[in-house]
Amino acid sequence: MRDPAFWWTAPGAAAALLAPVGACYGAIAARRMARAGCKAPLPVICVGNLTLGGAGKTPAAITLARLLIEAGRRPFFLSRGYGGRVAGPVRIDLGAAPPETGERKWTAAEVGDEPLLLAGVAPAIVARDRPAGVTAATIGGADTIIMDDGLQNPSVEKDLALAVVDGHRGIGNSRVFPAGPLRAPLAAQLDHVDALLVVGATGPAAAGAIDAALAHGLPVFHGDLCPAPEAVAALTGKPVLAFAGIADPGKFFATLDAHGIAAEIRRPFPDHHPYAAAEIAELLACAERRGLTLVTTEKDMARLRGDRAAATLAARSAVLPVVLVLKEAASVAAMLRDVTMRPRAA
Image 1 (cartoon, one colour):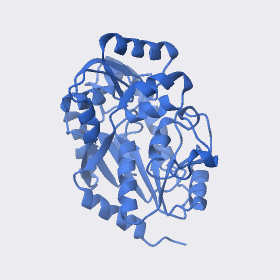
Image 2: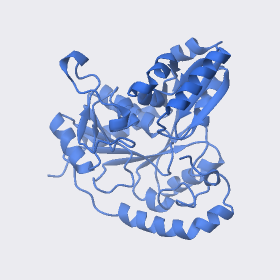
Image 3: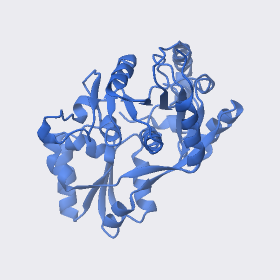
Image 4: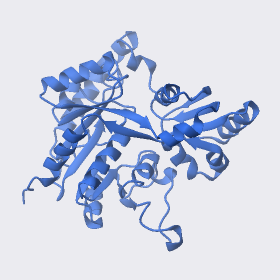
């Protein structure tokens, strides 16, 4: 399902009506976050959202992993595998072995779409039981764990918690679910955060989170999602049909606009959307009829490639990969170095 529109506007009647429920939900979530978690034998870095919906945490996790790899570390991702049916723990390592060796090939329907993206950079452990996932990563040879999501999950103690905020949507109406998009009261969440990362140009909706983070004494970093130049060049001058099943499809469409890619038709779908046969047929037929090039996100392609019914759509669609470019990359790298080199208590 899509986020309610009123989450991202000034508080109105719907938010006020749901505010008492949000207060109860927020109190429970805050108490849960305050619980002590198990201590991992290796550093745990958590990349999470303050809100429901996407903010850029998966690209942020990938960027952190690349910084760690450049520093000589061996990070593993830990994901709950949202949208997948496998409880885990299971390991996904796209670079571990060629298909002919019999290495298990996972699909998004089994483990979710995000782990498949993560595993293109470093091994990913999918586990609904986070401590069990930590154990699997440790046995597998990790020296650092990057949790993709899990900021509100207290089961594992974090050595570093980075909260990612979308610069445009920010924290919306600043209310707690279901009255707004916050997963818990903002102050209660920031009590468990070590730094804030704002993705994209900062708008008024993100200012509240930034001010609150600074009041908590937290560093605030900034980054931009930049598409791969070769993908932009391949699409420039071609009229396209853009489709996306992510938390904020409008961000994908805006990226196309910003780079001169003419999206004549735009088809938004809910986050983690499994494309139905009728939707696949309609996208293919519309592109054929109008002479348009189909283009989608890496996350959508991860789902399409594992779905036999979507094989034709996957084969005919171009992908616009994006990379999170940090403005304070040196400071973030220093923060990671401090966390990973810190002596661990016995």
